[in-house]
Structure formats: C-alpha cells, structure tokens
Image (cartoon, rainbow, N blue to C red; front, side, top):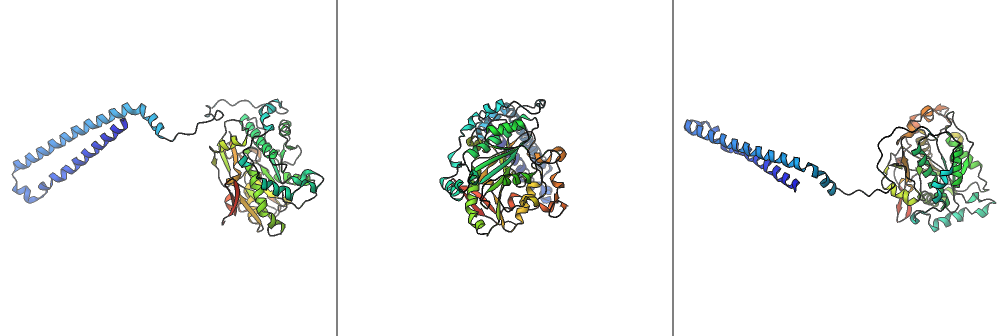
Length: 449
C-alpha cells in the first residue's frame, strides 16, 4: 500500500511539473508578437504578468507540499520495504542441514601433525559407503553391462583384469587444511561408489606416499600405489601413472578397449561417468577395431560449488549439490580418459598433476592427431569441484613447482613447451559432445575450428 501511495504521488508531481511547463508557452505567445505588444496597454501587460507570477507561486507551493509528503512516505516505508521485496522475489531453495551460510572468518588453525595419523575417524565417516545408495538413472543400463561383458569377459584370461574397462587414477595432497581434506575424502568416497556399482568393470587407483591416505583408500577398497615418480617437490609425474597401470595389467588380451583416466583429487564423480564411457566405447569400438580411428580422449568442464564441509554419502547428495553449482571455464580441465594404445607416454613432457598448462597441452596434442577424436562430456559426466580455501584456480599458485609444466621440455622437439602447443586445448575444441536424453547418453558431432 505504501508503495502504491508513493507511485501516485510521483505521478501527481510529474503531472504538475508538466502542466507548469505547458502553461508558459500557452500564455507567452501573446507577448512574443511585436504588434501585440505595441497595441496592448502597459496596464494590461502588467496585469497578465502579475497573474502569471501568482500561478507560478501557487504551483510551487503545491509542489513543495507533494515533495514533503513523498519524503514522509519514504521514511515511514523504509523498514517495511525490505520484506516486501523479498516476498515478491522467487524464493530460493531451502538449504539442507548440511549446507550452511559461510561462517565469519576465524583465525587460521595450526597445521595438524604430519603422518602417521590416527585413521579411526575414517571408518566412522564412511561407514555408510559400504553399501552405496546410487540413483537408478545414473547406473549403467543392462544393455551397457551386456555390451561390456560380451567384449571383455573375465573367462578370456586367468585373471579378472580382462573385465576392467575403466581405470581411474587420482592423487591427494596433505596441506593441513581440514576443508581440503574433507573434499578429498568425499572425492575418494565417490570413486569407491562408482567402482562398487560398475559390476567389476571400474578400478580406482590412488597414488600416495601418505600412510593416512593409504589407510583411507584401503578401507574404501581402492588400489594404492606408494612408490611412483615425482618431481623435486614431490608432485606425481602424470605419464608415470598411466605407464604403471598399463604395465601391471595382467590380462592376456592387450589390444582391447580400455579407458585409462586421471581425475584431480577434489573432483566428485558419479556413476554417470561410467555410463558415458560405456556409450563412447559402443560408438567407437567398431571404428577402432577396423582401423578407421586410432583412439579417443574424453574430457569436460567441471562444476564449481562453494564447499562448506558437508559429507556426500550418495550420488543423490552429489546431484543435489550440483543444483547449486556453476559450470567453469573451458580451459580448466580436471579429468582425462584416454582409450589405451594411441598415446605414447614417452613422447610427452614430464608434466606433473595439479599444475597449469598440462591439461591444455594434452588436449591440443589429441586435437592435432587426425585419427584421434575428442569428446566433450561436460553435460553427462557432471564433475563437481568442491571449492575450498585455495579457490577455483588452485593450480596457478602452488609454490615452488608452480611453473613446472610451462618450463617442461617437449621430448619430441627437445625445446621448452610454448603457448602454441596448447592453443587448441579447451573443451570447445572437441568435435563431439554428449547429452543426456531420456536417461540415455547421446553423442553428437559439431564443427570445430
């Protein structure tokens, strides 16, 4: 009601100002004509001017009263206007008990003691993950499972390695940041759920020298590699992990369709990843078996959400949090899945994980391979990045080895890598993209320059 009164008073004020402006040109034409001025008596002119001045004075008085009334209304309505505006706005979704508003900044807590650490809380935190609750729509379909088991049956080898069609490698860091640690715990738990719902087709590997994180991974039934190649700062070498996984593969069928992939340690994935990779396998299998295509690389953008420390116990929890996330830039890539065989790991620079430029170099490298296809899986993989205190560009501020990748030597040219080696290295340079249609992953082509 108060807003309506203010609107009416503003309308009156505008109308009176308009009438005042219109009054002058209507009354002055008689004074503009020289003939009229000469023929009219001075007394008449004085009388008209006096009348005009009186009208102007009356109008100013009315305007003053209206302005004062308007100010009084604004003063009285200020406290009540805020809830009114909120009531008309679209109501935001009710936050869950886990998602709370950011607390005011507090003094930084001291770093926790170095490992070994007591792993007792881990079993309590992840006790619910022994039987993960994954939404049906995110699980591989029966036809997808049949496709995989039909091409890669464990009976073809003395071991079960032949059943593995997706290897997922990841790493963790220890920085004494409790929020970062919880994000990494959530990430490992999500990979454990993905592995347990894949019918034996997904295997997850954690590369870490930490006794604490090794214990966490063991409880989550992940493969742990404690000895691996690093740079002088202790950061894992990217290519070494892929070589290790290939070398320890005991399946006798070496030329089979397998995805070897890496994902950053603070990225949450769901069963949608497996569903996407299965569809890529189905689409490219015959072309690769027939020699028409050499390989495929699956990449995608991530979705950022401000992390408040909540635990994500199921894919439903992840998907609810995704509703509050925003898709990030096309150059920031946090997961890569290579079909095995086309990438020669000895021919790439000694890149380390979690530092800038290597992700774009890898994509650019695939882009310039005529027989290799790039697939942008942003719309179906839904990789959730739990943004903590290190922000959304953590790879650009990593201390002593921050520039390791941009100073790496390309073994094919024996020169330091340069910007022209990653200028076609974004997700937009993928000539294929995925979409979820009716619960099924669809793959479409698109022109790329």
